[in-house]
Length: 239
Image (cartoon, rainbow, N blue to C red; front, side, top):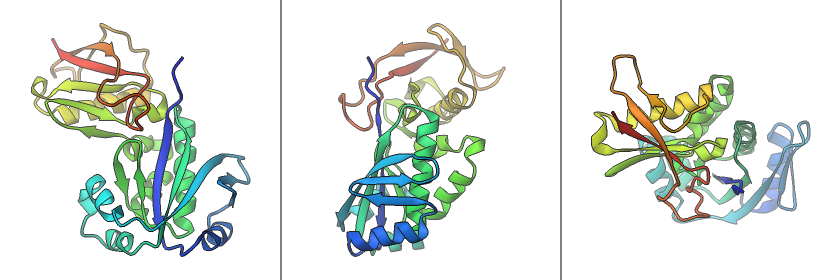
């Protein structure tokens, strides 16, 4: 039996203490309540674990590593001045749950949050970018919110476990642009949910190189690691 993976979202904020966070959530989050360690959306009934922690001196470095494209932005400067941080935790394994977590994180941004770092795949977004992702959920924006590609001798995606899907891996030398290949392949998996089988083939275009698909376990991370995908990987091998 496959263990359901966790989604963990890190959201630094200006809250000097827990009572201030609670008050801001009640006032500004758009329908969420915070009691004990539970964040509850009153209309949908969606509930998530929410942990409040004091300021983390390593937060800027963590966000910079996950989102270098906005390192020198005003958003990053505000993260530098954060007073505390919350961790939003919930079950992954389906698009619906992943998107519900995105909306909950947006509620925390509305309550003062300064950005969102996906602890379970290593990507980070500024508040404006996250709100746009939430506005575009019907356009499959959760893929962009959660999925990254890690490079090395083997290039592999990370984050498809949030949706209950396999990640993908390809040897770096097996494609002219392995990151683009995996992005296109995982986007296809997420948006089309095709019935993939071992031995099936994939190409980004009719005249593009074709790859054979083989299933293999995820060995890049230890079992239980937030990055680990319990559903495994699709290995793309050039024909």
